[in-house]
Image 1 (cartoon, helix red, strand yellow):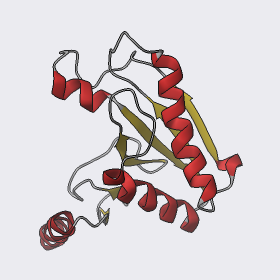
Image 2 (spheres, helix red, strand yellow):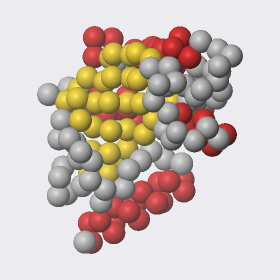
Image 3 (cartoon, rainbow, N blue to C red):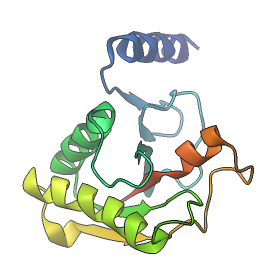
Image 4 (cartoon, rainbow, N blue to C red):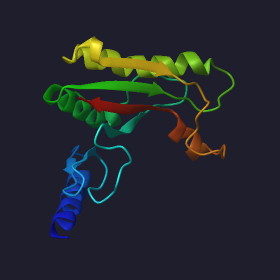
Length: 156
C-alpha cells in the first residue's frame, strides 16, 4: 500500500509540474506514462500504453502541450527493444477527408520519432478516420477527445 500511495504522490507532483512520469506497478510490472500505478491494464506484459497525442480540429501538427508524451515515448523506445503502432483518429467533421487527416496525424508522430532517433522499421502508422470516437455523443468535448493518435507498444 505504501508503494501505491508513494507512486500516486509522485505522479501528482509531476503532473502539477507538467513533467511526464513513468510509473511501474509492483504487482504486475506494467510500465505506464500518465497512468496511476494502481490501475490494471489488460495485456500489459506485452502491450505498453501511453496517453494519446491530441490534436486541434482539422490539423496534424503536434501541439506543444503534447510534447511531454512524444518525448516520453521516444525515451522509452530508446531504452527498450520495442515496436510502436500509431493509430490516428478524427472527430466527425464532415468538411474534411477524415481518413487522410487521421493518417497524417499518425504519420506526423512517426516522422517526429524518426527525426529524434527511432528507427523507422520499429514504427507503424495508420489512420482510422472517424470510425472509433472516444464516446458516441457528438458534443464539443467528446469531439476534441476523438482527435488523437493512440500509441501501442509491443516489446519483445
